[in-house]
Image 1 (spheres, rainbow, N blue to C red):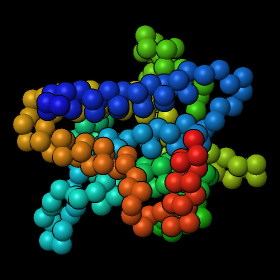
Image 2: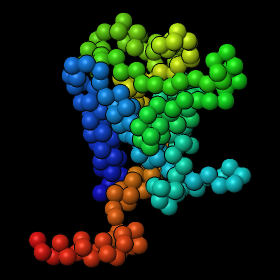
Image 3: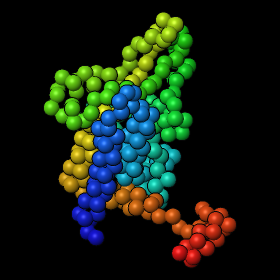
Length: 240
C-alpha cells in the first residue's frame, strides 16, 4: 500500500466514526436526548485521531520521540495539540484539559458529569459544575441556519450561571455535542490539508496511523489473555 493509499484509508476510518456521531445527533428522541452517550462518543472519537496526529512520548526535559505503541501516547497532550493545531476555535486548546477530564474521562469512566472543586470562589462554594447541553437541534437543521448555529455556539464551552431548586446560583460550564461535531468535522478536514501539504506532518501521521493499526490487533500468544481463556477460545474455534 502506498503512502497516499494509507492516508486515504486513515481518513476513511475517521469519516466513518464521524458519521456514527452524526447519526446519533440526527436521531429523533421524542424528549431529552442521551446527553452522556453523545458526549462520550464525541470525545472518544477524537482520541485515535489525536494520537495519530501527535504520536509522541514526551521525555524528561521536553524532548519527544515517536511512541512504540498507541497506549504509550499521553492522551491529554495529544488531544491538546490536536485541539490547538487543527481546530479553528482557540477555545479548545485553551481549555483542553478541562474539556477532556470533564466530558471525556467523566463520561467514559464515571458516566456522570464532573464537579470542579477548590476553585477560589467562596461565593459559589469554591466550585463550578460541568454538563452537556444537547439542545435537540440536528446537524441537518443547522446546516443552512446561521442564526440557529450562532445560538448553539453561544452555549458551547461557555460559563454561565444556573439556578438550583433552592434558588441558589452556581457557575456552569457547558459542552454542546452538536457544535463539537461540526468543529471536529472541520478539524479533520484541516488535518487532511496539513498532511497533504506538509511532508514532516505526513511522515508523523503515517507513523501514528501504524500505531493505530497495530492497536487493533490482539496478540493471542502474549500474556494479555490468561491461559485458561486462551484454551477456551482455541477449543471453541476448533469446534466450529
